[in-house]
Length: 457
Image (tube, rainbow, N blue to C red; front, side, top):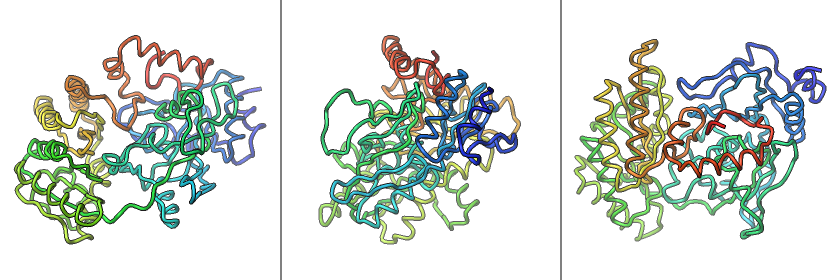
């Protein structure tokens, strides 16, 4: 019996997709120039048991399983590989439970981040991780890459909110990891190990997520800067002042113009770089911290700064930050970086990015979760310009080198996938790489879970 026949016999009729035109839309995520191929089939399960049936069928045939959510990834982690079945979990989108007393939610992996945030807000609760793709990306994908977001400078990343999960293992077992209690140290943290594993150690079919009380109202501080380096100095100054903003985002003029041209938001910023800070401490303390952030901006060379009194205008600027990547994509292929460096080195890293762009004659726009040093340079090339593409790829590699030289990491939240595999080898000690491979071998002994991603076997 063929793999497709076994899948057809094991699943309800509407779960299996074999139409080549439909399958083609599941071949890759949004990572520019990451390789992909045509999968054998796509399965869109609705239950954990159906996921288990897919894994067991693939085990029987030695076929790879590549799991994806909404396909918004930027590292190639969900790209189809030779002979694989793509397991698309976007249809498993139930919010199963919201516990008000214990402050957790139990959700399926296909729940969209913003949908969860809206649902728990109705109960007076808040799920903080908020990647820029939150209106589209799914919780399963967020967990798989340990996504961060605008709030993570103060409130942490996805890993900080995952309490437990249900997982289909590489041997086709359905197990529960983690806990629902506020504390728990029994055994190894296998649930934590799954966070950021990019589908290489197990397939997550349910997640239990910690919640917080609703966030207090925020004050927005905006600053305009002539240079990206001056904006970087302001970021370092905010950290040196002991401030912990609820957001500190950087967006350059190229991105703002692209967003405005696309969405006609009426942005009229006369600056090369904009820093957007937010403070959510209540009362007088919040007022004082907003003024202190304002001083940091001014001392770093802001040409204009203010604590916003126009909430609509402030929200529009933060909306522009979220829309920057898709807006730039409209101008040509975008190769997106995701390096993270210590906050004190943000000015130097931004300067190096600027110099690398000039050296390789590559247009680089900049957005960043600047408050925690997570920078997202966007390398833009014209359509069908192969020499420009080669220059951009060389610049991409040099940006990684620069981040590592400054004590940083090759990825802050997008994951390693395919694009950062060489960088990971540079970043990790060979002994540590072997530890990773040992874990992979133990949990996926047949090597079927997203093979060829993160690190070479």
